[in-house]
Image (cartoon, rainbow, N blue to C red):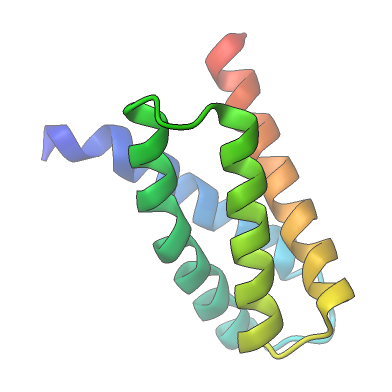
Length: 106
């Protein structure tokens, strides 16, 4: 279990923060929104975590890839217009990526 903590803590924090931010959107039902954010992060987080830990990709290109992937998930699953999905993807990932960067370097 100890080996999973470096993965699980950021995952739970990311899902919690991104769900909270996305829930500010008045149009979406909260249950569907939580499932959508959880699904998107279940797709992207393991891959991003592995690629970053193994130095395959640096932080910024990885965050851009994650944001693009999650935006497409939101657009297809919500379904929501692509501009709305892009705003949600950029906002949620900018906040969590920014917090991760601050916690890592400060």
